[in-house]
Amino acid sequence: MAKIRCVGIIIKQKVSEANELGLEVAAYLKKRKIKVAFASESKEVCDRALGVRCTSKEALINISDMIVVLGGDGTFVSVARLMKKKSVPLLGVNMGQLGFLTEFKKTELFEGLSAALRGKLPISERTMLECTLVRRGKVLAREPVVNDVVVSKGAIARIFDMEVSVNGKLVTNIKADGLIVASPTGSTAYSLAAGGPIIEPSVPAIIIAPICPHSLTLRPLVLGDLSKLSVLPRFKSGSVVLTLDGQKSFELQPNDLIRVTKYGKHPLKILRWPKRDYYALLREKLKYGYRD
Image (cartoon, rainbow, N blue to C red):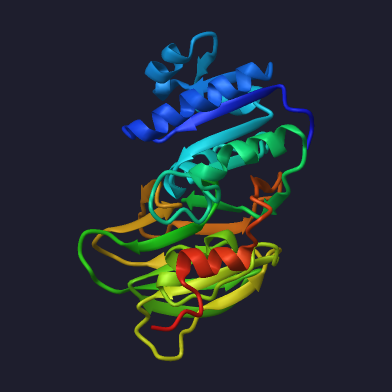
């Protein structure tokens, strides 16, 4: 990792413990002559820190060499989704409950920061997806995705049809409550709850996981990460919604086309705690292999 001159700090809102920890991080960094900047929604914390910059998340990414995220996985993903022009290493500190992406415990933070400033923390490079929504031949939206793309019914629980193609070839027509397209990072999120496989993050793959399919033969499918996936929901009435990482949604119209590919600009960079490997995370966070 390049020399760190400026560190951005993003804090989960309305969590007082995270605010206080953010102040401690700022003081730690300033003592070591590292510039500090807070995201603008933490302006009150920024004002208390004195002598630090307060700016938007997007601008924070542009000026930072590393970003410390104090929050849960939702906060972490909201930051990662903004990595459109450049990829800044993220150090996630778990202030929530599960904390699969926010890998560092609060007690490990300052040892981790010290290692990061010395260039001694390993970086896990994660494949992101890109979702494109096409309506009447025009691109309505094109967004990077960290965990998953979900197509599902809206307010009324009712199955609907989806035509799924890969590289221009029909895979199948799915009748289900919805469909999840997940990255390896997202394999331990919604896809896992829908019966999808756990994919080790370094595996170049894209997961297709139907949600409650109306067929015993429809099982999750793992594609190569260079695959070009198309989903064409077929419905005449009711509400069908496209959701990206559980954070951005689009109300679909009949004949809307959804395309999902690997995000080709750069990978997501996650700073890892070297004393805990991925399989330890599975055991600790998901109780993988545990028996009562």
